[in-house]
Length: 166
Image (cartoon, rainbow, N blue to C red; front, side, top):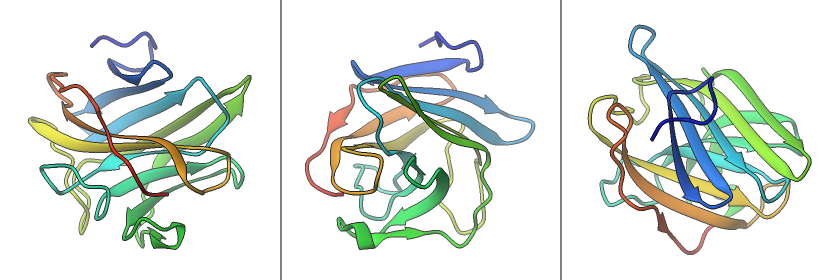
């Protein structure tokens, strides 16, 4: 699960065109992450579900919107665009959403244990959710996945593609 990007320690491929890169910082207690999609200039989202079975509703994600040049934390309250609510606490650092040459990169640094948010498990399995938009503006997604991954050991199950949702 070694990364092909020297800025990150680990990498998993969710799809031939979608890869998630990360490094855990045990001292700062942060997740330094990158989501890369190589088949389009689109919005991207990566986050965590509190549900062990991995449900999108109730998940907290980092959403990158190229049309607004914006990266923010959101909670998924419903499958509609209106149900994707910006979270009160915007503590991300190192954020960017970049589109170029038919590809999109979302980068961010997020705290592992932020008050009132889903805790990112740095030592065991985490239930992660990912989505790829169909354009640069938030609307229905073209791909979405649930992934069960141990961010420390890089153990992971095969990603599960799930239907429905924006």
